[in-house]
Image (tube, rainbow, N blue to C red; front, side, top):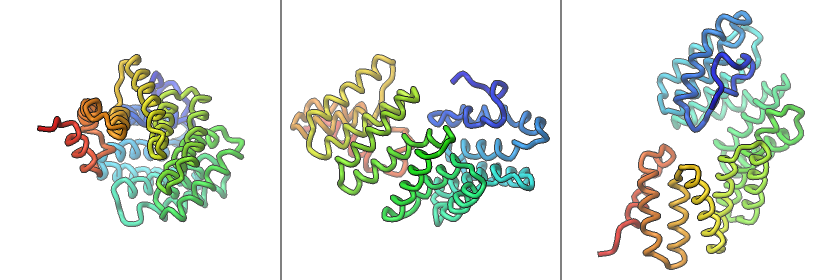
Length: 296
């Protein structure tokens, strides 16, 4: 990512984010802090600190993130609604990531209401999307639906930029409910949105999700072909994705091609061994390692 803390306006902090690299994002927000304190009478100090805290939380440095959010609260200026919304969102996200009781629900609700009252559509969508993650499934869908309706109707391009992520979240909800056809439609929307924005890596995630749902509904050969295509694209880019290898293995296993599946599971286990996404699912990694073993 070519942007740095000296090259963007203070009101475009989100441009400094690379969610695939929270450590690098943290460094950029730290570099932004002197500007945020010195320019515009410190109007963006609190907001910058909230994003610094978010980057720390994504690295599971929860105590540091909480301290940074306390600093943001002290820096918050009277009448700074946007900074207040950001602070609520990040307090909620930290509670969710660190598995606190309630998972930040009350903070997200307050952020939703405040953002709606001051016309901050993109932040309102963010709050609704988080409520869609922390609420029970029957309530979560309605929050995702509210977020999607606002994102697609808003004149704010930052709100519109949420459509792909919301469609992906809603796709997984449909998949978990056993509606793979509905899930595929939503993942196709996510893919198309991300392609239109030039976010090829995100579009590949949507394509992976589509293939995953095809496997669930029994169209295993098609799913295998789509995962192979993704793997080939990544290889051409000099990259590899453990989740693609995992799905290649699952497809081959479902087709009775166990010998071909084993090296795929082995490569998946190798690539995903330190993946934070599996930190709460150790049995999945154990299964990959088990399936990679050759029968005695």
